Image (cartoon, rainbow, N blue to C red; front, side, top):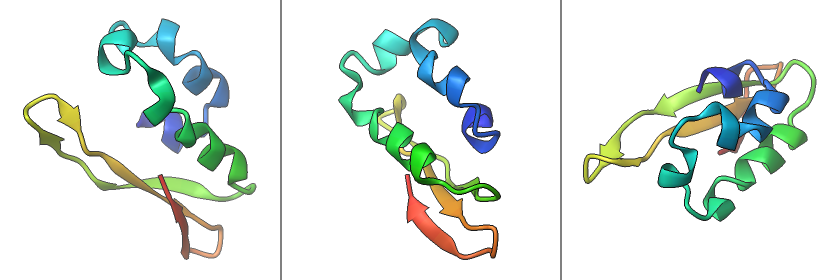
Length: 78
């Protein structure tokens, strides 16, 4: 969440090395890759805000983020 909110693209792309259990959380990362498209579509001044934090079955993260434009309107969801 911290890397997303800071738009730390290098840190996000290096998730397999940065996160000690990335392969356990995402054995096949196709559900994680759309995040990179959303980050790439963001404009300068846009920000990501957490809009929901929660887990299902004790381990399945249901975290949701909103991409907010510099003007303050939610423009996309990740």
